[in-house]
Length: 242
Length: 267
Image (cartoon, rainbow over all chains, first blue to last red; front, side):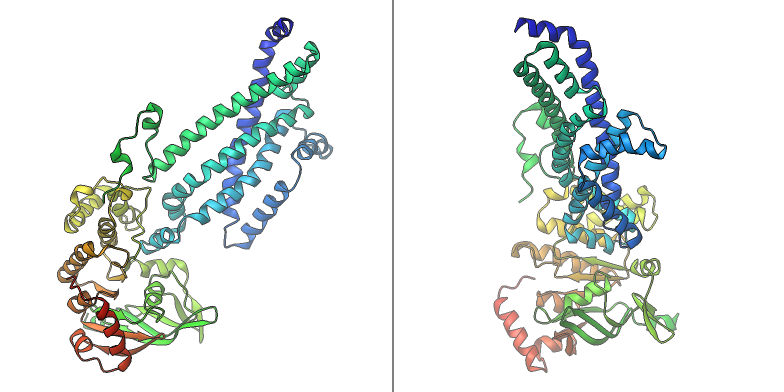
């Protein structure tokens, strides 16, 4: 065991690099996925067929194809057409496209879940289409989206492990290297699990904070400050007037 | 000017509305003069709320024309064909129409004040300062000046509805549609909301179209009552006449059913 720790200690600088690569894949992929989710999610709701149909096709395609095959395709096939992307760019792109397609469904569903009365009140106040979405509908849909986005983000983090196979030295790769140098399968893979879990847990905490804030803005639940204090929520924050 | 004053605020010409196989309005004609307060009564499913929703463009009609101040609103005749009016022109006409809903429909992501100033600032182009001054006046008028910065979710139903009324009035509508605005409220706070609306009726010349089961309110506020049944107007009269001596048997039945359960005087 002490040999293992010794080996791990020697590898620590490389662990930092590996975690950094995994974080770059995860956060880069998530940022791209988020933008795509919004574009494709809103596109899927468009009345114009020229917008809606391509959005649906893209969503269905990237949702329905394997992430690892997408990565391989970007990494090995795209150069055939004269576009050579860095490994990291391929990873981010594949993760963004794949999870963006899932996210688009989250966006679409959440927008549709905002009560009809909110749309109608906006019409009655003569708000323009874009204004209505931006100021009335989206802030309410956002609170519904976050828990589902949290799930997708964690899945995206785990999906990023596939980037090892397009030659990235990410956390998964590091774990494998650790196994080779220690010859201890249990130790190295357990260590890998724990690091992935730690990252996932941190991401969950951040997303939960976003969720608390979004709900509070809709007048539901405590403020983030109140939650972080872990003190009992004052009664006034919860109870509406009778 | 005199010419304009005789133009009806609202005119329905042969308006048809179907929901699937169910024809709710089948060639409805009626007009509402400027400044009129018209109450629509009748059993549920008789098409009253549909009329308000058509006027707010929340539903699309399947036939006929709706005119506001003599202007085609949602559809117009072009070359002998009925065509939809583009959204841009609808918006211009819709600006004159406001609506208060049964379920209030305040925006939960905004404070009371923000709910009221949102459309005046972004649609009418008022400065925030102007809109706030007006909003504060309106909150005063509906008796909620102290709730200016409250969250809508912290308000009771009656308070939310009063904010919704202030929000609709902040757009300076020429026509105000009231769709069962007290139906979702506890009986004891219905009077507050109706009191606010009575004052609006007394102090403004806004044309009002009211769907309500509060017959005393209808009697006090409106100058005309339309009795609907199966999407048609079966009786039309001044409130005094229709509530005391309805001509049609169907109206008598309806009123005795409604007034029978409504023994407590809520005014």
